[in-house]
Length: 278
Image (tube, rainbow, N blue to C red; front, side, top):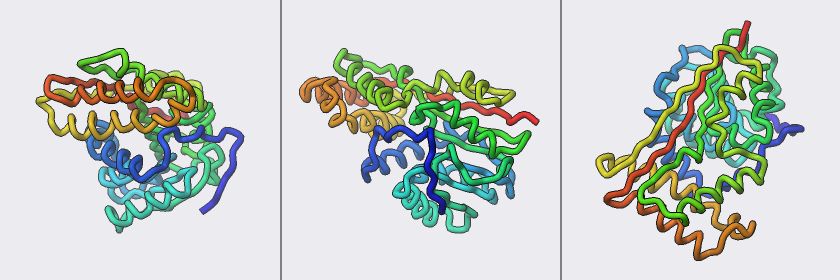
């Protein structure tokens, strides 16, 4: 494994690297696998780069949909990469995976080394996502594809909604912006990919809608994915002076009401596919 430094480092991971966060990422990936990975399958033998694989939560689903690919999974966090390796060793022991510790801006691969690049929930953490995409385009062969999936916290709508709950979600958006990231990056995928030199850019929304008639999503998305993600920044929000303990906790309690009988929740992810022009 190669350790890289970069003039465009990722912002600090606002959600942290706790075991709880790793579990949340796994729950999120499993709950949204069909929604996010539908339509993404690479032929056996394809050279695929997953840039920013994290703890391997998405990697497992990527490999399940594309058996036989030659996957390189890269991440800037050695700790996350070790968790990813353990996860995939257990879930897909015969998968052909090369693990790389390094920054995606300075990947030590030759030009055109990969047939496909897969990026999920990474651009939101980059201070210059267009530069990150340009660096990935260098290692993608002409005619190869990139798939990018990102969320947009501005698309979170829920019932019942209270000012305290809305402010608590906004704290996460502000903290990520303050760290140099963008929790609203989903709406920017088309211009970002275009500015990075990709062609044939297609962006489609992938919407999660949750109500009492969808108990698996109530549990998997509202209770175990979205609310814990917001709740995890409590310490940072208080340290930044954005809120008081009482107001933050009130907002989380109100947000949880969306998972109770009569509650609803809506969130939109954006999935983009583009081509490295010949």
